[in-house]
Length: 169
Image 1: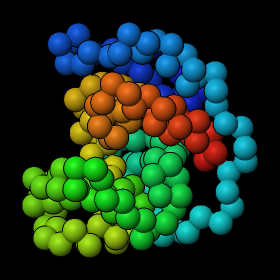
Image 2: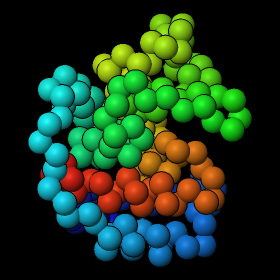
Image 3: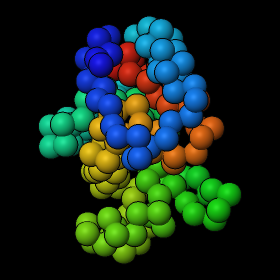
Image 4: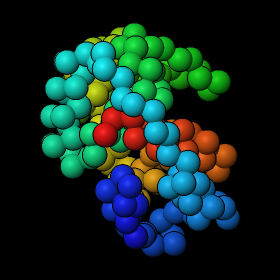
């Protein structure tokens, strides 16, 4: 299956890997229909764009998808911070969670959660998490869903991200 307007191939995956909510097809259809057609913002920081292009190439992630996640997560605020109900914290442009990604933090030599406020570090790690999700689930819709957590009720998050994709074409 291909979502033509985004030029993103959506692959199916085995049933035992993911059990989508009963309304998965309905949500996917809404994502295709409800695209946001506003023009892209013109004042994006060049260092953000350069790093997004770098990781887009490195991990084969559509750069529009990375930018849409950044827009949705932090509205391009590199100092964005969120304390979650479970006590963990999200930091930076892509709201990377240090506590939920300890193995990845160790691989990248991140020993202080505040290092996630660095633009390059945050985009690199956020893209890596998204890439790992894509490898696991085989499609961008489920990769984005997993980026926010695999809760059954986070389809609004997925919809919000994909609506923002068209801002960056």
